[in-house]
Image 1 (cartoon, one colour):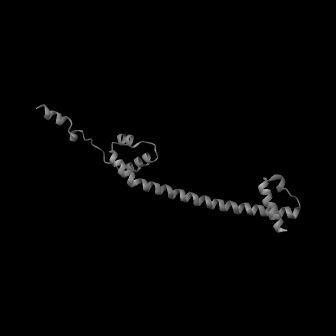
Image 2 (cartoon, rainbow, N blue to C red; image 1 turned 180 degrees about the horizontal axis):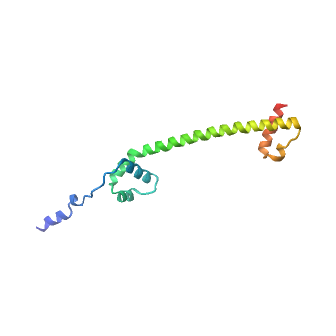
Length: 131
């Protein structure tokens, strides 16, 4: 009868879409795009021909890995910057000591005239300590 044809038209097995098997690199790429907000889940599912449930699973599984890698690189960068700040502070102190020593020996107080006020004050304090 007509009823059988209607069942066949709405059969979910017929409308089932064939999805591609995604490589690890593709999964990481898609997760990165979705978690960084560059593409929505629906758009990614359509573009890369993967199911949205797979995307949800990949995001749950791989997002933490990506976040850990980002955090580790940020920690490395912070350590590098802290080391650089420490190095520059040492150089600044050394230069201030030299300027203070020069001013004590020559009596020529050029730091007030040529350096920013904060640096000139620091050099003046070092000069007073050295006396």
